[in-house]
Image (cartoon, rainbow, N blue to C red):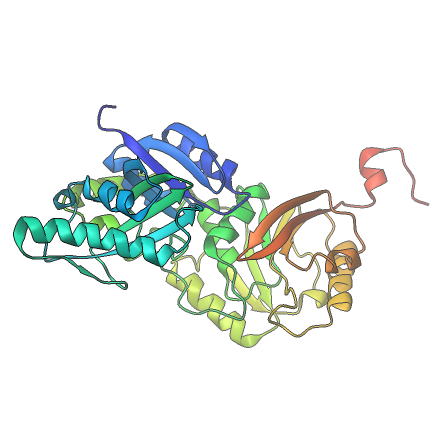
Length: 390
């Protein structure tokens, strides 16, 4: 316990509670959800585990210093208080990422420049040499967060955003972010205990994330690298031990996961990505138009998809969303259907009443994750066995 330290997991709006639940299930200590972040504690092994396993985290930050500053002189002084030689050698590279919400500091680039100057000056004074900036593949990624006059300095343990899972090499038009896809599925209650269908699967992201949840496969097992692998205290043996421990918790999946798309190019891309994720034995992708299909399995069906919003695809929105509703109503009894859309006006044309609506963001677009429950027979019959429809 004495080796535990504070960490911050960044996420999307609306995913804070499910990320907190993920962290608790992994064994994190002192888990506290905030706005787009979840604070927690763990040791170095848990830092590795969080990066490997969390489905709804975008980044894992390790705070190292906190101070007050309301001008550039105090900012420079606060940065200089850190002994940067503990994290960086004078022949290595770094980059500074900045988030500011402050009337004292209004330009993130200025804050990044001041931070860089303080770090470089410290090395130059001690050794006569200095580390350099590398925005593409730095040895150390530093995160500066300023909220009014409170400055937090953190090390970015992840590197590239954790939505870069490593399996998606081919994308279709308007692909869904992997973290957004995983969060959608977890919010929908998907746990791998039924058949699954994505009827508009595009490049297959929801299919892959659904299979990884169903089989309890670590979200980032296919990722090539994490930022902490370049740190001075990198422990490859510990990382391998954590990875093996997570892989020992995988489970078998005995239902079906299917994806449809009417575009042959999308189907090919989805198959490639499924193969990259080593999940071809669990996932079937077919070239089909959802509006010409019907439910093919017995028992409950969990459906989740990301239909076009009209942002980047030219479709007749009113007709398209009406056909979604008609197809669900007529051809998919015994189905819980979830989809996300940023076209809030189009939801009016589905012609069904959603049983849930959850506010999310797809990039900068305000969206809704909606659920439609299709019952076997009528809803009235479901809740009143003595009801006769004739």
